[in-house]
Each structure stands twice: as C-alpha cells, then as structure tokens.
Image (tube, rainbow, N blue to C red):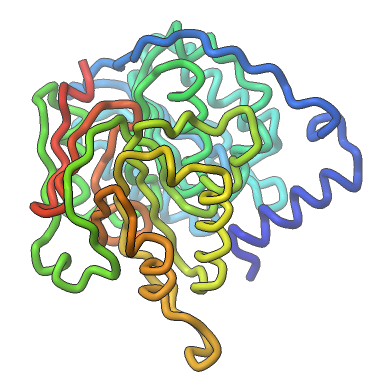
Length: 344
C-alpha cells in the first residue's frame, strides 16, 4: 500500500505534468507575514466546543471517529466533526476545496475553541496556498496535529506568529501519558518543564551535550524537508528543531537530512530534539548504514546539543509541543523547559 512518501512524490509529479493552475510552479505565491508578534490562543476549559477536521488523508477505519469522540468527551470537551472527516476523494478526506472550507468554518466559528485533526497522511501542501492568513490572526485558537499536519503548523506559526501544537491526532493511541501531556499543555497556563525517560536516553542513537535556547519548530522529517523551497518554510535561525519519523530506511533519512544540511538549516539552529524513529531499520542491513550510523554521521560532531528518543510524533507516548514558544533544551538532563506559558 502506498505510504506518505509515495503520495508526496507522485502527487507532486502529477501536478507538474498536468499543469494544473492550482499547483502552477511558474511563480511562487506571495505570502506576507501578517505579524511579528507571537499570538497565544486561549487555553481549553471543560465544556469548550472543539472541531475535528480532515485536512489530509482519508479515514479508512471508521471506528476511529467514535473512539476519538469518546476521548474528547472524556476530556470534558464538546466535539463537532466536520464533513471532511467522513469523506473520501482518492486518498484524501475530501476534495481540496472541501477540506479547506472545513478548516475555514472551524476557524471562523466563535464557539469553537480548538481545531483537532482526525489524522495525517498527505494533503496539507495542496491547500496551504489558498488559506487566508487573516483567519488565524483574527481567530487565534488551538490547532494541533502531527505527521502531515507538520506542514500546517510550521506555515501558520511562521506566517502569522500564532503558536501551534505538535501533538496527537484522532487516530493516535490515546494512552494516559499522551492524554496527561495534552492536558498539561492545553488546559493550563502554567509554565511547564518536560523530562525524557532516563532509561530511554541510555539507549539513545545520538546524543550531544549542552544547553540551547530558542523557539520550537519542525515535526515530521519527511514533511518538514518537503517544505524546503516553499514560501512556508520557517525561519530556522536560533530555533530548536524537532524531528521525528517512522518507517523510513536509513538511506532515506540520510537523504532528507542532507537536504536540510545543504539548505543551511543545521548551521542556523540552536538545538535539536529527535524522536524515536520507529521502524527505520534497513531491510538489508548488510547493504546499508544503520540508523544510528546515519545520525552519527550528521550530528556526531554537531556544535549544538542533541536530545534523542524524545516522545514525539509516531510513537505510543506523545508530548504536546508548542511551536513558536521559547524553550531551553538541556540535553544532559533530558529536559525541555518553556520560558513562558504556552496558552493564555
């Protein structure tokens, strides 16, 4: 079955060959930065209405929908599921216009306090150029997701200053760790410190000591690297970069990291947080570097601190991370300390 990488490759190629005006590469769209100030959405409260939208891949297992409804209700929230959650257009949850309309409706509805995504997959890049950034500036609310939602989070925060949240989606495994992390991030205006599991750090694939300070950016490696060259790729200067991945062989990890290096990303960031990179072992180990070897080649002599095995993205336990919020990374202690509240 095609995976996210195949969708990206063939969809972009098909758009180029067909010359569809929606994907025209003749001229990159002009995307103004609406504000230089950081915008914080309001924290969630018991009884808040929240939207669940399908902005990327279609939902194949329909049991995900009632299961996620129960998760949100157990959090004390009142979920509204957009039509795109139930729709399918090829591998997408509705046409580009349908998915974009659902996002707009969720943002412009004053009763809705947060926007959750039912899943990732592929699709955000197809609709991002038609978003009106005023929607986000005039209606600052919590927007959360990961995987393909990486594209949306970084574009919004870079272009509007609105803090976005790298965290679980509807088809995630909502264990107690993930639920507690989300509640601490989105229901409280306290300043937080996150700590990694010390036992996980013993088995870290790569580790560089030191401290770094900067705002958080990044997300899924494949999606983040695919943003290179677009007008939505964030400013990396002085930032703490978060990267995670699943199901990619070491040579593909190497290729994506090399693209980021050649674009100057690793000469700009102040620190790096890596996820667990599950299922990223080579199919033929005798013909490949291991994942650890690839990471050592790229970051073994890095001049910035590197923290590995962080609970982010495609893993059972998930942090909810605020993109755009200043934090201090201590790779020696395995901690990430925010410098301010991440919601109002």
